[in-house]
Every structure is written in C-alpha cells, then in structure tokens.
Image 1: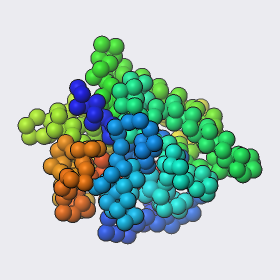
Image 2: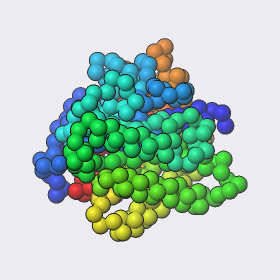
Image 3: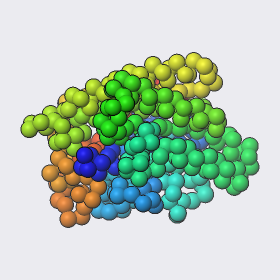
Length: 355
C-alpha cells in the first residue's frame, strides 16, 4: 500500500499536417484556429513544475528529468522533454512552452497566454490528495480564480474577459483516483458507483470553469492505467501483462464520463465541451509500438523501466541509450516523443470538439 501511495504521485476538416522531427512531430494547423490562452488542470501528466513549490515528495526537478528540455533543464516536468501541454500550446501557435502557475519567474505575458495549475498526485477524490499532498483540484480552481483577478489588475477588464472567452481549458485528472483511492473506497463504493462519483465531481469542475467564462473545455478520458509500466509490475503478474482490473475501471469511468459530459453540454449550447479519448491512442501504441516508431512500450527509459519513478529515477540511475525508441520515460510518464505521437493522434478529435 505504501508503495502505491508513493507511486501515485506520478500517478480532416481542419487540414491537420505534420512533419517528422528528431523527438516526434511538428504540428502545423493549416486552418486558422484562434486560441488566446491555454489553462491546464490535473495531475502529473500535465504538471509543468507546480510541485516544485509545495511540500510533497512528488517532484521531478532533478536529472534525468528534463535532460532533453532546453539543453538539459529539469523543471519539474515528468518527462525527458516537452509534455503534452507544451506541445499543445505550440500546435495552437500560442507559445513554445506552457509554464507552471507557481513558477516565481513567470512573465506577465505568460499570464495572458496561459499556465498550468496541475499538480502531480492530484485527483478529484479528496482522499487522493490527502495521501499525496498534491494540490487538490478544488485548489487548482481557486488558483485559476486568482489568476483571472490578477489578469484584470494588469490589463483592462474587457481585455481579460476576451482572453478567457477565447481560451481553452484542458482537464487531465481522475487517473490517480482510479489507481489509488478506488481500492481504499471499496467499503463505500463498488467500481461503477465510484466511477460515477468521480464523474459527478468532474461535471462540477466543468461547471465552475464555465461560470468563470471559459467556453472551450477539453476533458481527457483516463488512459489504460493497467498498462502503465509500474502498474504492470505491481498487478500484471510474473509476465507484467496489462492489468485488467485497472483497465476495466478506466474503461467504465470513460464510458460514464463521455455520456455525462455530452448530456451536460446540451444544457449549455454556448459551450464547446468534449471528452478527448486518451485511452485508445495509448493502448494502440502500447500494443503496436513498432507501427509508431517505438521499440519499447512496456517499460520506461529510466533504469529498469519497471518501477523507477520520481526519486527512484535520478541522476545516478542509468537511462536507455535512445529515449526516442521508448514510449514511456519512467514507470508512469511518457517521453517527449511519446507525448508528441499521442497529440498527433488526438489533435483532430480535440479540434472537432472545441471549434
């Protein structure tokens, strides 16, 4: 159980074109898509370094994390290089990187073009963040409210409102709830009732984001949690197969999430809210890595790749000779190339949902 607590911290009509790069793909949107800012909420998949500034063990601000980021700079991103938020703002033409909200060196122009409020180890279930000391989703929402107030102090209120109105909010959370808190809630919930409870919390979060003026909201489904390298090691048996229990819970959650978000959106015709399928693109790559240019998709590049994450993946830990051949960077998180391939496969879905 203690190990799981520790591991949780981590825990086309748009004419889309791409060209290969050394780490993945460069995205070019041939149709003009107007995005003023991107605001990201969630867990370690989209934490840009906020955990550096809070009291938690869930940090990635040391090598080899970031070894391929701006010449080898560990920023707290849980990858060797760029994360999904970085690649997304680049694809939208907003900026090259999405900074962490708590970064004390953040520039005023970044306040206007978006930040990430995400925290490694976070989730919607209060039990999740109680055990990981991450920033709860409710607090991330409060941080966004303060961000808007700061915007309105720095620029005219009308200009701030226009930024929020033309922004995109991205929510990537729920994974840690399903991995850690669900087993601890079994006396209160079975899997369907727990999944439904988390979905209701997601809907409440969407509602609050909408009240603050955001009209384009992308909610990522849960990934195939049972296929993450660490979960294979813990629950996949001697052959480290994908763990059916975790994957089945993720699939049930995703089904409820899609149904309920679609229903919510019918009551708010001015919104553009969509669930982005994060599960199937990942499972497709994991099951057919060579098709996507990877040699290894069942373990990470760091150390043995089977268990190393956070401080177990450190500058004394050997890494694979070529991280571009690995889908996973550590036991939970994707390499920069892995993130770029995923974005390539979900971007049209995201555009169709939001524009």
